[in-house]
Length: 153
Image 1 (spheres, rainbow, N blue to C red):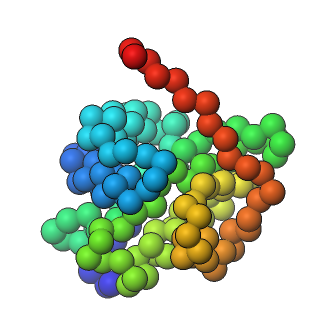
Image 2: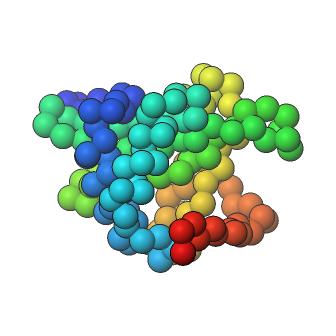
């Protein structure tokens, strides 16, 4: 782990980041991988840092994982908060502490920038929930709901 570093993603990382999201969304029931959509979403964040931050864990050869934090305002908290949108580690590098390392970096970033809360949605399997609970997140009584628009159909 010593040759790994966490740093902000750049536009040059778009291809690798897109591949990571394709891998993530292939496992999730709620989403279907779509390279163009993932590329477009990542570009929107990277081109406007006021929208959020993407941090990558990389070695000298490639990106191992990423965490994506979106910035918004909470009227309940009366200030800026983060939404943890994506946390993904390449399949061959999972269960080695890399996800924990990225999550700790994100929490420290939020603390240093005085964000008031980090909110996330996680999959129902107990493994995902246990991971976030282990890192200090608590379950909410809120129930996520969506209204989906189908543009062009």
